[in-house]
Image (cartoon, rainbow, N blue to C red; front, side, top):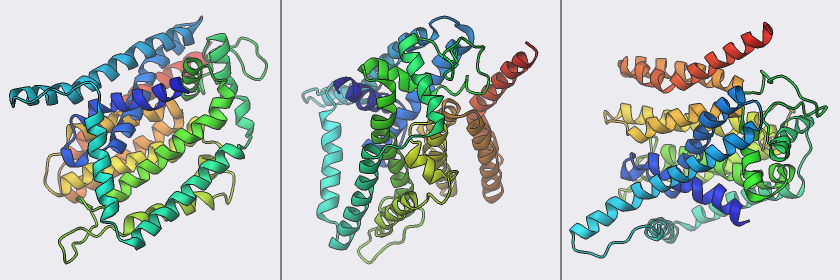
Length: 390
């Protein structure tokens, strides 16, 4: 449990301090930091694991695991340095006692904001938030107590288990247990290998981790993305669609309603086996479920960040573009087809923004953020071509 908390909470949060360092103050929060940390961590895992899958034949998981662990710890240390060293230097210049290295002040600040928001919240809004929390808790309970079995688990979960036990990635066929050639279809989608890494570090069986632990990680992350989207659309601070009330504050009663509607859609979206909601709650641990439920909504969150900044004539923070790149790379570890889909979605969005804002620089900026996608698809084509002519 200590290892799970360390690798699924502490390390992502510390890594997230790097991109959030380049965000403006009104865009920083504990939720944004943990989201940024996960996307940056997954992007880092792609950079390390994909070359290991392609170029290292024996014990490639052991190699990738060692490198990823070292790089993650290094990035976490850098994030802590970004967060606390400048503040400590500023306090020393002001003749105050330096406080760095703990992060208690950051959490205290976020807790203070949350407490103040709850105290000033109308009772109707409190009831709405309690209703959302009940729906959210119900989904977590069902995901843990009634974990579903899917036929794809025979491949994805077993790949994680093979990596954990045999220390190889995509070199053993899960259906037979025999050695095989590099799997072209799944070789670059290394999300099961990240699950195997967490399983190895924590000492938990990969199947138990996938079915029991991952829903408690991926479902809250998804709703955190929805919360950030709702905060941009209906929030008190800088909402794109917010309107001012008589007391000068932004109207925010639509935010809990938005979250309730999203939770209801997820619960009752199982109208077929192919819907995003079905994948979200019954295949939570699979890469394609993460791509549809988490990565694509996060992409819309970034679109709102970039589009909102351009519409107001303000410079978009460098941290937003860094998150844009990390989200694009995260799509690659989830599913190969997701890279193509989000590239098309980004191209359409960039074209619409360029026309509305009459600024072709939007195309260049979003195109530059998609360079990792182009490299990913080029590598995929080369591997597929080599496989066909083997």
